[in-house]
Image (cartoon, rainbow, N blue to C red; front, side, top):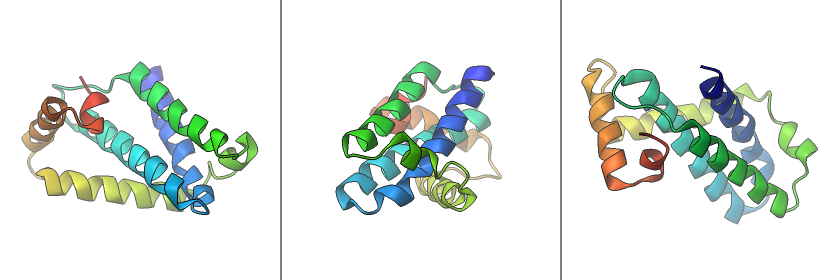
Length: 132
């Protein structure tokens, strides 16, 4: 699915902006939390056939994070400079998976992904707004 691949690539790209953003503590939380939510949504989509990522909404959300960084004065070059940081991507993926586990996801029980996904949708969380 080309759009899902594009959204995943966008998460990877924006994940890498967190290191740049650390100079501005107010920005770190918004960007980091947004990327973690997007990662959680993708993980739920990957493991639950009953839900899917809202690709256009997700891309718009990620573009909003990038725009926020640009509004704070970060250039595209600064944002793009971190695209290859596997360390930052791995760190945020770990946090996303830990949060999913705390919400009840059990990797040995595939049904828990759907339970958590439906709960996030019902609660209207950022993760839930990225799913349908």
